[in-house]
Length: 384
Image 1 (cartoon, rainbow, N blue to C red):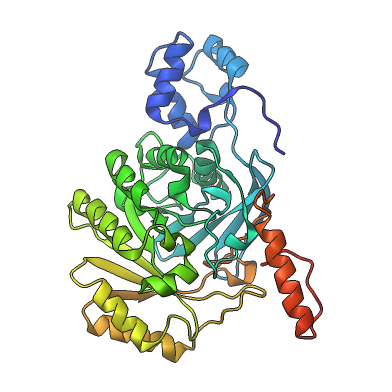
Image 2: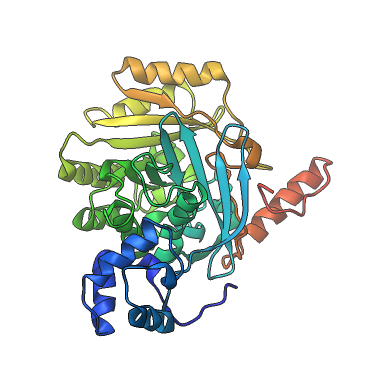
């Protein structure tokens, strides 16, 4: 478990929270802006480098505050330029962050929880079980680490991280307050100044929290759909049993309609061979999304050990895309990136100290299956 110092970690505080902090220690509110710039624009983690702050205040800050990001356990770089960090959080678990370069854009895929409580059947993160929510400092700390690693401090217009997607480990809407605080820092000009159009929260469909999100922030929204009907989605995305498609899509419509500016929902759909990739599934999806402005992102399944699923053929993927396209939808197929470092979509596993014992049960079942098939059982966690 990561050692805690009892000091206030300024890394995860929004501008307003920093102002409140400085008032609480008897200082002027404008100090918040100065310190926030040092932390996020310059990557500072030492108060002594803050040259526009007097020595007396620096000493006061050293006594009661700190700037502490997650501990970097490892960093891997793929042949295609994708980067993956494994970082240790306060609970002792490790989570993963992925940076994907493409042209002039650099997208950072950020985790919000250690593990995930939702257990989507095709996602290796879900098979790890759940340990803890990340703090706001641990979430924004992933952006802080990525920016510093590229030597892009002080921040520049051409900095490496141009887009952030809350699509890493965990369900962001189940860690609502910390995720909202971190995204606020991402968009704040004193933070990372990323456009609200380029910060995206992806949810599996926690419908009530989509409505709550609309009250406090206007980031882009993505829905992990993965099935065009309730029966199949109940199997692939178990939270659908609580919030079925009609309820989730209504919440998404309300959220998007409140944004204006011709913003649209991103629909993510992982294609699984012979499970959800057939023409009838495309037809159902077309009917489901009729008159709903959206862009569809098809994600060919990225295998992990003992998942029970396979990637569809390229022909099946193109067929599915063409059917949606001919119906008038904007459809892209996500290129698999970082597969050689297990950084592709659905492959993130980290090292989760599983409180739910789901990973233990999953491994036991897979071992029994392997033994029945005459294979050697695996003792490693899925994805490793």
